[in-house]
Structure formats: structure tokens, C-alpha cells
Image (cartoon, rainbow, N blue to C red; front, side, top):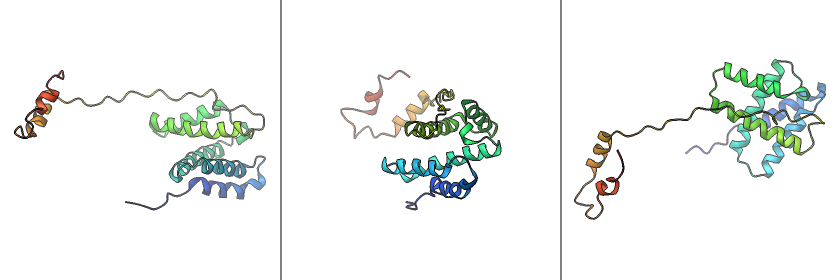
Length: 169
């Protein structure tokens, strides 16, 4: 069993932005630090906090690449971010995980009054529609093979056949 602590992406992101915040209008390092503190006092696991940090790092890198200042993030920015994730080939399930983290982060900032009057950009963003995963069904032959493994001498009152014999195949 691996007992190593996961790398703390959120803490690393805070350090990175604290170095860069001297030139920015918004104190991104301060926002991340406040969010990190909130995650800690809510007893989130280190793995969860680190996962949040990974997603936020990717989102903030996207903003930097597109030269969109954080204080100008809108629902359109989020949709463009979604499109960039789709272009990279991420699954709808993975993208929904990213959206959930962004919803948590922006919801936190809104609740704490840290959005400086701007609207929560995640408010109008819905999760992507995902296809339903079809679970494999056992064929009658597979069921017979499974049942043939049981020792019928041991199960006298309730045999596997009687236990599932009424199931439609």
C-alpha cells in the first residue's frame, strides 16, 4: 500500500501566484490561499485538495494562454475552456469533473464576497451530457458455466440453480 502523500498542487499553485501577484490587479495567490484554508477546515482529504489544485492550475494556465484576466472570466470564457478540453480529447466525464471543481471554486469566491461584484461565471454553466454506460449482460451460456462451478452436494436446501432459477434469462 502506498502511503506517500499526494503532491499538493493547490499549495504549489499558491506559491507560484504569490510570486506573480505583485504585478497583477487581483491577488490570485490570496484567493487560492483562502480557498485552500477553507478546504482544510472542511476536512477535505489531501487527495481532494490536490485534485482541486490540478484543475485550477490548468484553468489558470488556459487564462494566461488566452490573455484573459481572471477578473474578466465570464460564462463564455468557461465555454471556451470546455471547448479547449474537448479539443484535447478529454472525455465528457473528465470535463464534468473539471466543471464541478470550477463550480466549487467560484461558488466559494461568491459566498465569501471575493468576486468583487462580478457575476459567478459558473452560474449558467451546465454539466455536459454524457452517454449512459451499458453494463455487459451475461449470456445464458455464461450463467450455466458459473452455476456448474458450485458443488451441488454442499448446497442441499438452496442450490445456486434454485436461488437464481427464477431469473429471466
